Length: 187
Image (cartoon, rainbow, N blue to C red; front, side, top):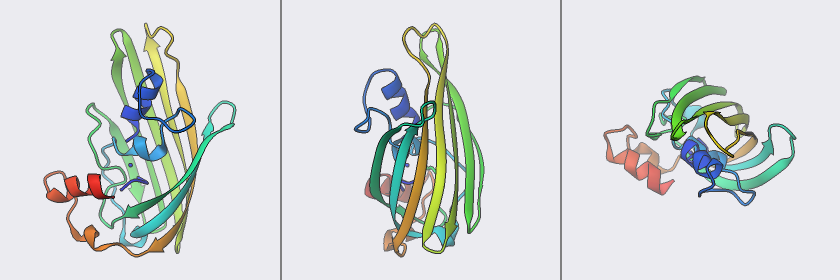
């Protein structure tokens, strides 16, 4: 499930001058989300294949930093962001047939003496075969961080359901099943 899919690790890599990034140099929303562990699960009303359009903006300047479109599959009963970040993240949120809201936060020592605090907030609404949402992803650094500075990205998300849930959605997706592994590599 990519909409609700590899961010803290990607954001850390980008912020620290490494790896996974969009054309503009920042992490994609879907990259950040897949590293989060969350409890809320999607209701059947959200299920299906979606075309998702995302516009990324800098939180300070509001300048567009990237935009992209992708296919995503949402399965009823799947979490907003399945995955394991590799460090403690606290998430709280809700999903109904027409809305979702979640906030996650956590900290990690980015480099010796420098703590990175990650905060992710997403909200969205669904009406029929359309969805809209926003997300804010920020990383703040405290301590001896050298040239590393904070990063904040806002996401504007729109989507259209283009098909029903595929048959692969019937495989249970919980941490102890083959379905979780399958979900990470096939959606």
